[in-house]
Length: 288
Ligand code: C2E
Ligand code: MG
Ligand code: MG
Ligand code: MG
Image 1: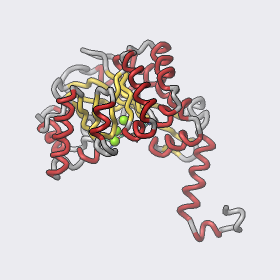
Image 2: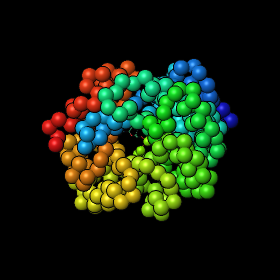
Image 3: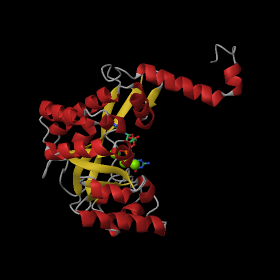
Image 4: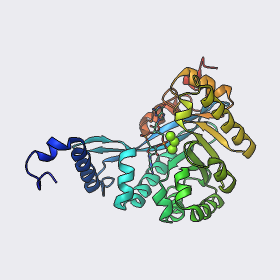
C-alpha cells in the first residue's frame, strides 16, 4: 500500500494500521518452519495444589523468538498460525516438545500433569485425536498425565464434532480442561454436555477476587459447580498474596500465577522440582 500511494503517504495518514498490517504479514511469512529453525520454545508454568501444597502439574506455553522482531507472544502468533493453515503442524510440534520434557521431569509423589493449550481450528480440523495418540506413543507419556486445555469458543465453533473427539480422547485416558472459564457464552450449558475434568477460572475474576465482592461471589460459584460436578478448579493468574488468600478461602483446589511461579524453561523447572519436589511449596509458606 505504501509503495502504491507514494513514499511516506501511508506513514503520514495511517501509521498504526500500516505498521500492524506489515508486522502481521511478516509474521505470517516467517512462521511456517520457525519450529524447525529452532525459533520456538515451550515454557512450563507450575500449577500448585493448595491442599497438598506442592506442584502437581505444569502448563506448556509457547514462545517464539523472531530473529529480527524479538519475542512474539502466543496471543499474537497463534491466530496467525490458524489463518495461515499451519496450526496443526505447530501444535503437533508443541505437543511433542512438551511431552518429551514432561516424561523426563523429576517428581516426588504422583507424576506431574501436563496442560497443553489446543486451539479451536485444530479441533475443527479433526486431527486432534490422531495427533494426541501419535505423541503419546512416540514420547511414552501416559495419557492420564495429559490435560488438553480448550476454551468455550472451541466448543461453540464446532459443537457436535468436538464432543465426539473429546469423548474419544477421554476413552484414551486423556484429561480435558475448560480454559478461561467464565469469559465465554452460556458456560453452564456447556458443562452438562461436555465430558471435562478441570475448570480454569479466568484471571479476570481472580485479579479482582480480593477487592470486588461480585468477582469473589463468581469465584465461589465456580468452585461450588466444580465440587458438584466432581471437577478440579484451578485459579489462573494469581499475582498477590491477598488474591491467593481469597482463592484459598473460597475453596479453590489449585492455583497458578506469577506469585507462585512464572513460566519456566525446562532446566529451571527441573532445578525447582529437584530441590524439594512434592514438599512444601516455597511460595505458599506463610500465606496460609
Ligand atoms: P492461557 O492458556 O489462558 O495461558 C495463561 C496465560 O496467562 C499465559 O500467557 C501465562 O503466561 C499468563 N499468566 C500466568 N500467570 C499469570 C499472572 O499471574 N499474571 C498475568 N498477568 N499473566 C499470567 P501466555 O504464555 O502469553 O499465553 C497466552 C495464551 O496463548 C494462552 O492463554 C493460550 O490461550 C495461548 N497459548 C499459549 N501456548 C499455546 C499453545 O501451545 N497452543 C495454543 N493453541 N495456544 C497457546
Ligand atoms: Mg491455558
Ligand atoms: Mg487460561
Ligand atoms: Mg486466561
